Length: 98
Image 1 (spheres, rainbow, N blue to C red):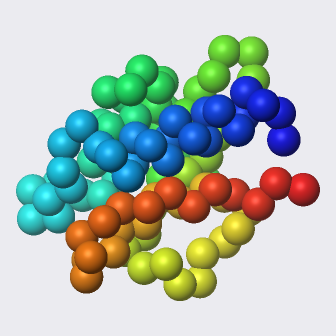
Image 2: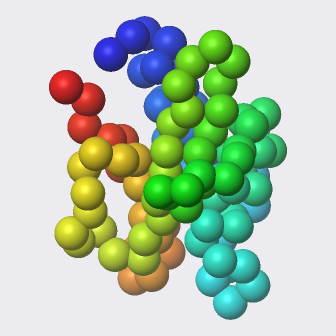
């Protein structure tokens, strides 16, 4: 994995774990909240056919994301944003890189 990609994943993790606004499940979906937070940090968030959304980067491949309210049975070929309703904390799970 490149240093640039590592840096981007770190920024995404920081954005999700220290968001500009708290996630309030009764006000907005996890997907809408995650997309807002990432846009707020300057990411270009776009539609993705086989994921919940993607982040576009100039001259590089898109990074795809799905959201879940459960950390169980997650496909490790894609990155996840997971909401834990017990602790009320969102986490970022990076896709497995070969």
